[in-house]
Image 1 (tube, one colour):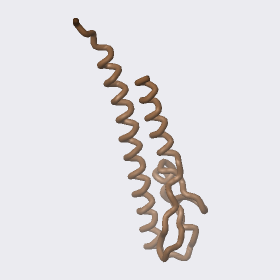
Image 2 (tube, helix red, strand yellow; image 1 turned 45 degrees about the vertical axis):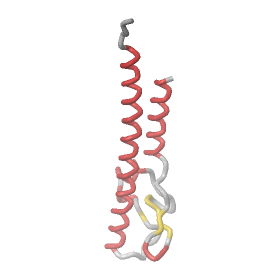
Image 3 (tube, rainbow, N blue to C red; image 1 turned 180 degrees about the horizontal axis):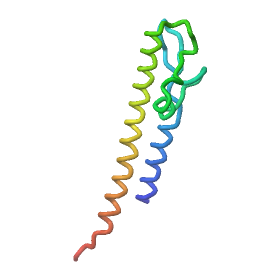
Image 4 (cartoon, rainbow, N blue to C red; image 1 turned 135 degrees about the vertical axis):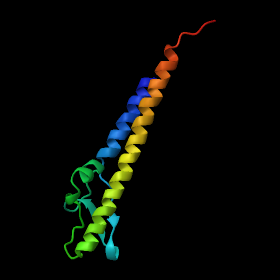
Length: 107
């Protein structure tokens, strides 16, 4: 049961890393995407290839585009930190439970 809970936590962490980042409201109230085209990429995708981040529009200045890319990288960093916490806590919790269950008890 404990191993199942640990495995579920790791599965949740992997899912968090791979599901798309949310669409965001960018400059001037337009909807923008942290990914290529008109969809947002995953946190892993944005982290590995920040140049894939577009706004779906080429009308923004270079400074605004760079600010948006930095914002999306921040979203990806936050998501990946959450992945680390969830995955690490799941593995650590399962390992501690296994360790405690394996300690012989004297009567």
